[in-house]
Image (cartoon, rainbow, N blue to C red; front, side, top):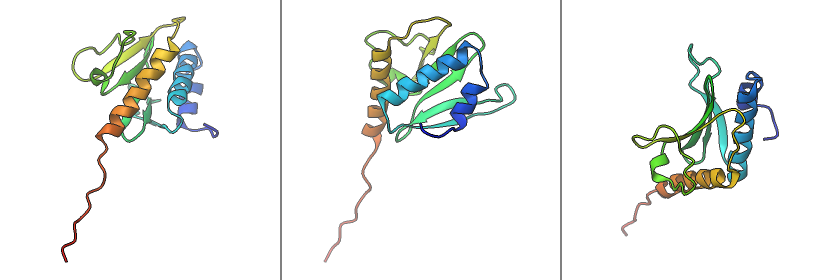
Amino acid sequence: MTRAGPVDELIAKTPDWRGAMLGKLRRLVHDADPEIAEDVKWKRPSNPLGSAVWSHDGMVCVGIILKERVRLAFSAGSSLPDPKKLFNAQLLGKSRAIDVSQNEKLDKQALKAIVKAGVGHNLAKTRPAKTRSRST
């Protein structure tokens, strides 16, 4: 995270507590996986700034700034261990999310563990390239 990018812009354009919270979540995601890539996607009229997306061999999680909270959503959340019960939103289907309100204290270790599990889930799905067997 040495150069400014679209996620920096998203955080800067959200100057209240939600931008600061997205910045904290971003640091935790990068602490959990220093090789994770980030981008901003899904810009639309109802959400002109878009959402922060972190991926490592596939999408791991999405940081979404909502009106009264910040959401960290995991598309494969139902497949990830959550022993500390951080998932508190989108509890139906395959996805799971963690909604964070203003002044809410984060369980940093548990959150990093979920991110690491998300990366591990993606890496387990990655298959090596097929090799052709040569017949002589």
